[in-house]
Length: 95
Image (cartoon, rainbow, N blue to C red):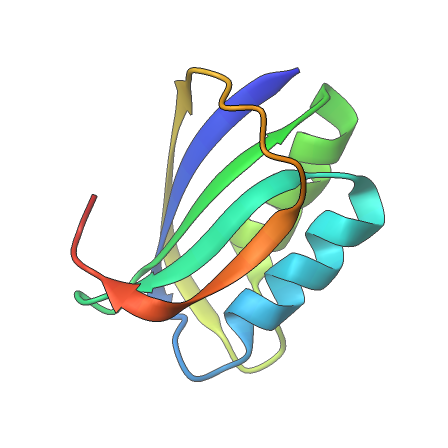
């Protein structure tokens, strides 16, 4: 199990990025959350095995159909033991 902090920049808000990320996460078994940031980016914390996280990263590079992903920044973090994958509705300031 690994924990990834993922920041996705580009046209990634208002294109169902969060809902699609949740669908992908649920399908491959990733736990964590996704939230829009005030700067227009999307932030994801994801935990899972290598296969699940690779699948999630593949999604983050492309996004849903109407998204335009310009950059993806990833760093490994400490496991937090998430029990599911949540869409956080409120916009948060940059973490």
